[in-house]
Image 1: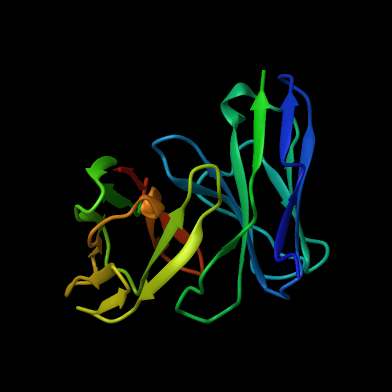
Image 2: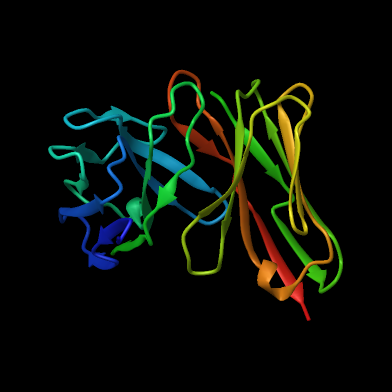
Length: 115
Length: 111
């Protein structure tokens, strides 16, 4: 089993370009998340999904859109990339465990540079 | 908004020395999780604490959850070079199954 797979792993964009990051999981988990990691700021939640067909905003959603058309896939889109979106993006999944948050399983990350 | 603060930001220790990182929340947490991220890698789950005053051990690592469930600590005894990386604590955000992470503590070990 691959677990959580992110594509692409590296990408360089010019300001204003668009792109989509794909997260695929084979663990049949209900919850999926997109985080960004910047030096000194830890991991910040962008958007998340509690199941197929659902999405919700996290801490820093502006400039991003997401879709969860299939349970195993969670897409993160940048419609018009900005240099401030240069970051490492991590996808994560968890089982639904009710009021106690389940552990997160992370992908290997996608490093995005916006020039 | 809800915040999870972690100190220190960075620590450089001699191999064999102990290391502790502290996590403080602005609100009471139902549970807290700890993750480790090796340089260039992705965060990996270490442990989850749920009960007030809970203490759990994993070999040389000791995790504590405060009595008021607003703070936590991770202590590593006799650090080794394999301990290098960034240690994150994370607690659930208000309303729902989402985690908010501390900024992390970067640990470097000199051999």
